[in-house]
View 1: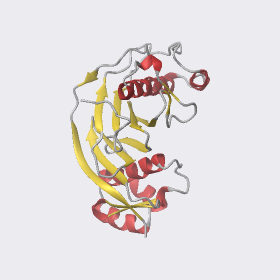
View 2: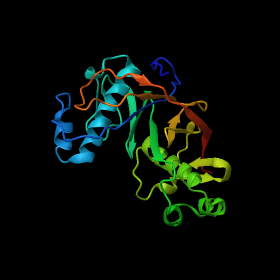
View 3: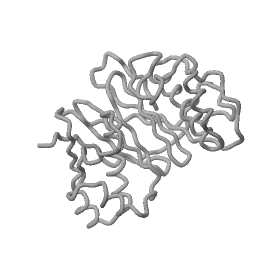
Length: 251
Protein backbone atom coordinates (compact mmCIF):
# COMPACT_ATOMS: atom_id res chain seq x y z
CA UNK A 1 0.00 0.00 0.00
CA UNK A 2 1.19 3.51 -0.72
CA UNK A 3 2.15 5.77 2.13
CA UNK A 4 2.45 9.52 2.48
CA UNK A 5 5.78 11.23 1.85
CA UNK A 6 7.04 13.15 4.84
CA UNK A 7 8.84 16.38 4.04
CA UNK A 8 10.76 16.15 7.34
CA UNK A 9 12.26 12.81 6.34
CA UNK A 10 15.73 13.49 4.86
CA UNK A 11 15.57 10.32 2.77
CA UNK A 12 11.94 9.77 1.71
CA UNK A 13 11.04 6.66 -0.20
CA UNK A 14 10.26 7.21 -3.91
CA UNK A 15 6.64 6.49 -4.78
CA UNK A 16 5.38 5.18 -8.12
CA UNK A 17 1.72 5.45 -9.12
CA UNK A 18 0.41 3.57 -12.15
CA UNK A 19 -2.85 3.30 -14.04
CA UNK A 20 -3.99 1.58 -17.20
CA UNK A 21 -5.28 3.86 -19.93
CA UNK A 22 -8.83 3.41 -21.21
CA UNK A 23 -10.00 3.27 -24.81
CA UNK A 24 -12.95 5.19 -26.13
CA UNK A 25 -14.07 8.10 -28.30
CA UNK A 26 -12.69 11.61 -28.13
CA UNK A 27 -13.95 13.52 -25.11
CA UNK A 28 -14.48 17.14 -24.19
CA UNK A 29 -11.33 18.27 -22.35
CA UNK A 30 -12.14 18.22 -18.62
CA UNK A 31 -12.47 21.51 -16.77
CA UNK A 32 -9.60 20.79 -14.39
CA UNK A 33 -6.94 21.17 -17.11
CA UNK A 34 -4.76 24.26 -16.91
CA UNK A 35 -4.68 26.65 -19.87
CA UNK A 36 -1.31 25.20 -20.87
CA UNK A 37 -2.65 21.63 -20.76
CA UNK A 38 -5.77 22.60 -22.68
CA UNK A 39 -3.66 24.10 -25.47
CA UNK A 40 -1.44 21.00 -25.53
CA UNK A 41 -4.22 18.41 -25.64
CA UNK A 42 -5.85 20.40 -28.46
CA UNK A 43 -2.97 19.28 -30.69
CA UNK A 44 -3.87 15.60 -30.23
CA UNK A 45 -6.69 13.30 -31.24
CA UNK A 46 -7.68 9.67 -30.81
CA UNK A 47 -5.46 7.43 -28.65
CA UNK A 48 -2.81 10.14 -28.24
CA UNK A 49 -5.42 12.48 -26.74
CA UNK A 50 -6.55 9.84 -24.25
CA UNK A 51 -2.94 9.02 -23.36
CA UNK A 52 -2.26 12.67 -22.56
CA UNK A 53 -5.42 13.05 -20.49
CA UNK A 54 -4.72 9.83 -18.59
CA UNK A 55 -1.21 11.00 -17.74
CA UNK A 56 -2.44 14.40 -16.53
CA UNK A 57 -5.16 12.70 -14.49
CA UNK A 58 -2.56 10.37 -12.96
CA UNK A 59 -0.18 13.22 -12.11
CA UNK A 60 -2.88 14.85 -9.98
CA UNK A 61 -3.67 11.54 -8.29
CA UNK A 62 0.03 11.01 -7.52
CA UNK A 63 0.57 14.51 -6.10
CA UNK A 64 -2.63 14.25 -4.07
CA UNK A 65 -1.86 10.87 -2.55
CA UNK A 66 1.74 11.88 -1.77
CA UNK A 67 0.71 15.19 -0.19
CA UNK A 68 -2.62 14.20 1.37
CA UNK A 69 -4.59 16.75 -0.66
CA UNK A 70 -7.60 16.01 -2.90
CA UNK A 71 -6.52 15.56 -6.55
CA UNK A 72 -8.60 18.54 -7.70
CA UNK A 73 -6.35 20.79 -5.60
CA UNK A 74 -3.15 19.49 -7.21
CA UNK A 75 -1.39 20.40 -10.42
CA UNK A 76 2.10 20.16 -11.94
CA UNK A 77 4.25 22.94 -13.31
CA UNK A 78 3.68 23.87 -16.95
CA UNK A 79 5.85 22.24 -19.59
CA UNK A 80 7.47 18.95 -18.72
CA UNK A 81 5.84 17.77 -15.47
CA UNK A 82 9.04 17.57 -13.43
CA UNK A 83 7.65 19.14 -10.24
CA UNK A 84 4.41 19.99 -8.52
CA UNK A 85 3.08 23.54 -8.72
CA UNK A 86 0.47 23.06 -6.00
CA UNK A 87 1.33 21.98 -3.46
CA UNK A 88 4.97 22.75 -4.16
CA UNK A 89 7.88 20.66 -2.93
CA UNK A 90 7.34 17.42 -4.87
CA UNK A 91 9.56 16.30 -7.72
CA UNK A 92 7.82 14.30 -10.45
CA UNK A 93 8.72 11.96 -13.28
CA UNK A 94 6.27 10.71 -15.89
CA UNK A 95 6.40 7.72 -18.23
CA UNK A 96 3.78 6.01 -20.38
CA UNK A 97 3.92 3.23 -22.93
CA UNK A 98 1.53 0.81 -24.62
CA UNK A 99 -1.49 1.53 -22.44
CA UNK A 100 0.14 2.04 -19.03
CA UNK A 101 0.98 5.37 -17.39
CA UNK A 102 3.30 5.86 -14.42
CA UNK A 103 4.12 8.89 -12.29
CA UNK A 104 6.93 8.96 -9.73
CA UNK A 105 6.86 11.37 -6.80
CA UNK A 106 9.42 12.32 -4.18
CA UNK A 107 9.47 15.15 -1.68
CA UNK A 108 12.22 17.68 -2.31
CA UNK A 109 14.64 15.48 -4.25
CA UNK A 110 15.02 14.63 -7.96
CA UNK A 111 13.98 11.32 -9.41
CA UNK A 112 13.61 9.75 -12.83
CA UNK A 113 11.20 7.01 -13.91
CA UNK A 114 11.00 4.88 -17.02
CA UNK A 115 8.80 1.95 -17.98
CA UNK A 116 8.90 -0.37 -20.97
CA UNK A 117 6.80 -3.41 -21.94
CA UNK A 118 8.77 -6.61 -21.65
CA UNK A 119 10.14 -7.89 -24.97
CA UNK A 120 9.58 -4.54 -26.68
CA UNK A 121 12.90 -4.30 -28.59
CA UNK A 122 13.43 -7.25 -30.96
CA UNK A 123 16.04 -5.16 -32.84
CA UNK A 124 17.86 -4.04 -29.71
CA UNK A 125 21.32 -4.86 -31.07
CA UNK A 126 21.06 -2.03 -33.59
CA UNK A 127 20.25 0.46 -30.79
CA UNK A 128 23.11 -0.79 -28.62
CA UNK A 129 25.66 -0.56 -31.46
CA UNK A 130 24.74 3.04 -32.17
CA UNK A 131 24.27 4.47 -28.68
CA UNK A 132 25.92 2.26 -26.04
CA UNK A 133 29.55 2.22 -24.91
CA UNK A 134 31.96 -0.52 -26.05
CA UNK A 135 31.91 -1.98 -22.54
CA UNK A 136 28.13 -2.22 -22.59
CA UNK A 137 28.04 -3.69 -26.08
CA UNK A 138 30.57 -6.38 -25.22
CA UNK A 139 28.64 -7.93 -22.33
CA UNK A 140 25.15 -7.31 -23.73
CA UNK A 141 25.96 -9.01 -27.05
CA UNK A 142 27.49 -11.92 -25.16
CA UNK A 143 24.30 -12.37 -23.10
CA UNK A 144 22.05 -11.80 -26.12
CA UNK A 145 18.91 -11.19 -24.05
CA UNK A 146 16.22 -8.60 -24.85
CA UNK A 147 15.18 -8.21 -21.22
CA UNK A 148 18.74 -7.49 -20.15
CA UNK A 149 18.95 -4.78 -22.80
CA UNK A 150 15.65 -3.30 -21.57
CA UNK A 151 16.96 -3.08 -18.02
CA UNK A 152 19.96 -1.12 -19.26
CA UNK A 153 17.77 1.07 -21.49
CA UNK A 154 15.35 1.98 -18.68
CA UNK A 155 18.26 2.72 -16.37
CA UNK A 156 19.65 5.19 -18.89
CA UNK A 157 16.25 6.81 -19.51
CA UNK A 158 15.52 7.16 -15.79
CA UNK A 159 19.01 8.58 -15.19
CA UNK A 160 18.59 11.25 -17.85
CA UNK A 161 15.19 12.25 -16.43
CA UNK A 162 16.56 12.41 -12.88
CA UNK A 163 19.50 14.57 -13.99
CA UNK A 164 17.36 16.78 -16.24
CA UNK A 165 18.80 15.88 -19.64
CA UNK A 166 17.50 14.59 -22.95
CA UNK A 167 18.61 11.48 -24.80
CA UNK A 168 20.55 13.23 -27.57
CA UNK A 169 24.27 12.90 -26.87
CA UNK A 170 23.73 11.77 -23.28
CA UNK A 171 23.05 8.02 -23.28
CA UNK A 172 26.68 7.26 -22.40
CA UNK A 173 26.67 9.55 -19.34
CA UNK A 174 25.55 6.40 -17.51
CA UNK A 175 27.50 3.20 -18.12
CA UNK A 176 26.03 -0.13 -17.06
CA UNK A 177 28.58 -2.91 -16.73
CA UNK A 178 28.19 -6.65 -16.27
CA UNK A 179 26.08 -7.69 -13.24
CA UNK A 180 24.58 -4.20 -13.33
CA UNK A 181 27.50 -2.35 -11.87
CA UNK A 182 26.51 1.24 -12.68
CA UNK A 183 28.65 4.36 -13.17
CA UNK A 184 27.36 7.89 -13.79
CA UNK A 185 28.95 11.20 -14.75
CA UNK A 186 27.73 13.02 -11.65
CA UNK A 187 30.20 13.55 -8.78
CA UNK A 188 27.71 12.77 -6.02
CA UNK A 189 28.03 9.31 -4.49
CA UNK A 190 24.41 9.01 -3.35
CA UNK A 191 22.58 8.23 -6.60
CA UNK A 192 20.48 5.06 -6.38
CA UNK A 193 18.60 2.85 -8.84
CA UNK A 194 15.84 0.28 -8.35
CA UNK A 195 14.28 -1.96 -11.00
CA UNK A 196 11.24 -4.26 -10.88
CA UNK A 197 8.59 -6.01 -12.99
CA UNK A 198 4.91 -5.08 -12.64
CA UNK A 199 1.88 -5.70 -14.84
CA UNK A 200 4.06 -7.09 -17.65
CA UNK A 201 6.29 -3.98 -17.67
CA UNK A 202 9.80 -3.20 -16.55
CA UNK A 203 9.83 -0.18 -14.20
CA UNK A 204 13.07 1.57 -13.21
CA UNK A 205 13.50 4.49 -10.80
CA UNK A 206 16.65 6.59 -10.27
CA UNK A 207 16.88 8.94 -7.30
CA UNK A 208 19.27 10.40 -4.74
CA UNK A 209 19.45 8.85 -1.29
CA UNK A 210 21.85 7.67 1.36
CA UNK A 211 20.87 4.03 0.80
CA UNK A 212 19.18 1.85 -1.82
CA UNK A 213 15.42 1.65 -1.38
CA UNK A 214 12.56 -0.04 -3.16
CA UNK A 215 10.01 2.48 -4.35
CA UNK A 216 6.51 2.22 -2.97
CA UNK A 217 4.41 1.06 -5.92
CA UNK A 218 0.63 1.47 -6.23
CA UNK A 219 -1.64 0.55 -9.13
CA UNK A 220 -4.70 2.80 -9.28
CA UNK A 221 -8.01 2.14 -10.96
CA UNK A 222 -8.17 3.53 -14.52
CA UNK A 223 -9.57 7.03 -15.01
CA UNK A 224 -13.29 7.36 -15.74
CA UNK A 225 -14.28 7.60 -19.39
CA UNK A 226 -14.78 11.37 -19.12
CA UNK A 227 -11.67 11.81 -16.91
CA UNK A 228 -13.59 13.13 -13.93
CA UNK A 229 -11.04 13.92 -11.22
CA UNK A 230 -12.33 11.60 -8.52
CA UNK A 231 -10.04 10.25 -5.82
CA UNK A 232 -8.81 7.00 -7.39
CA UNK A 233 -8.95 3.71 -5.52
CA UNK A 234 -5.89 1.45 -5.39
CA UNK A 235 -6.08 -2.00 -7.00
CA UNK A 236 -4.47 -5.32 -6.22
CA UNK A 237 -1.17 -5.73 -8.05
CA UNK A 238 1.93 -7.84 -7.56
CA UNK A 239 5.42 -6.79 -8.52
CA UNK A 240 8.74 -8.58 -8.66
CA UNK A 241 11.89 -6.81 -7.42
CA UNK A 242 14.88 -7.25 -9.73
CA UNK A 243 17.82 -5.23 -8.41
CA UNK A 244 18.88 -2.21 -6.38
CA UNK A 245 22.19 -0.49 -7.02
CA UNK A 246 24.18 2.54 -5.97
CA UNK A 247 25.32 4.53 -9.03
CA UNK A 248 29.01 5.18 -8.58
CA UNK A 249 30.72 8.31 -9.91
CA UNK A 250 32.94 7.63 -12.90
CA UNK A 251 36.63 7.86 -12.08
